[in-house]
Image (cartoon, rainbow, N blue to C red; front, side, top):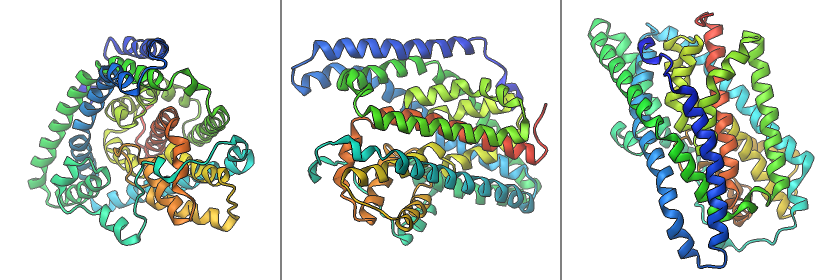
Length: 418
């Protein structure tokens, strides 16, 4: 894949354009919000619709390539490991890393929300049950297990069920490696497919600044600059938690690569910025693969670990789920003892897997968790207005977390180039 990852000459320009688009979106959104002040919501929605459409088109283009890219790269990554034993060794280490940092993320969210108790100081009126419009997820073990294994891989790809695509790809990759020479043709074909899709990615990424402009304009235009200050306590404490989590992640990676951490940050700044500005870690997935290989990660490890990370290693989203669930309980004055909170963490650990690609997936999982622990689901209405702002931070953190995991696995396997 080395030929596909040469530095594009306009890489820094795209980053600059994204930053300028964020600022321009805030300014345009503010002007629209002031102009439409006092007018019906239908008028506001009709004016902002073209801007929302820019972001929707970009995210649709990205989601269009996610499933085939995950399938092709993961199958090639697994098949190139050469044996089931090799897949099991790397896979075991990778999953152990994911589990450890999932618990760290969830525990950090729980610790911070108990320390700051933002819910007890919000003094917000309790919303009616009808105001919470997010359907809750089923938490039964049977339905969770059934969701992991696809009835049809075509259906899984059509619905962007990334976890199901990962499961099929793992089986397919192991079987491809097991049949030897006959499987080599398939590996070569899928390797070519992944190169083609990555070329498509380069075309799609040129549209990113327009998507960022549209997304920021739509959010600020609808909510006003007030969204940047409303619930400032909750937002500030949550972002503090993200910075602490990022410090833990980068500190853990420093143990493996020392000062090369700074080089990694330069490589992943554009994917992280893209994830932040679009509130979608998926949007950064194709670009992130390229940047990790530029950094020196082995193509086989990247193709194996990174797709798994998008289903099992969403550190920012998991910290948010524990933080937000306990915040809602605090808003209602519901006290949860330590044992109950630990049980909540275990539930979130299971139900958070495979949520990539699902719109507002974190809210869906939180809703199911609230129902399990008898916390009014109407409390979700407290978060709906600011969720886009929070989603930007957790998406960028997800990108960094998966980058750290991939680099660490490459170092452990002796597959990291200097």
